[in-house]
Length: 76
Image (cartoon, rainbow, N blue to C red; front, side):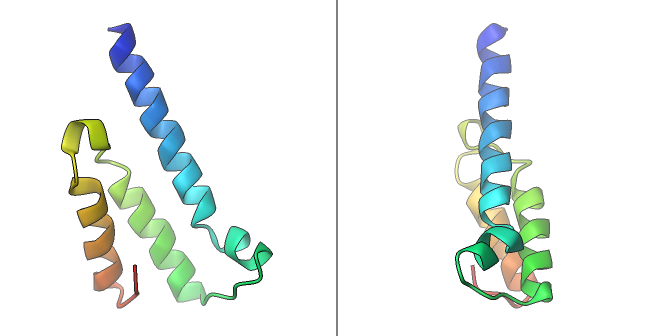
């Protein structure tokens, strides 16, 4: 039981880090300018993909993110 909770916490932490690193404020701080539409797509797709943790769903997380970005006509 404790292992399951620990794995879920690690997955949540990873999802939060990925979301922060994909956020527009991080990108702008690094000198990159992105559109509001791209920032919104990145956020929405990161949230959608975070539902599928790798240790449970395998590659579904990245496929969900890629499909979501394609739906928004954005590059991964």
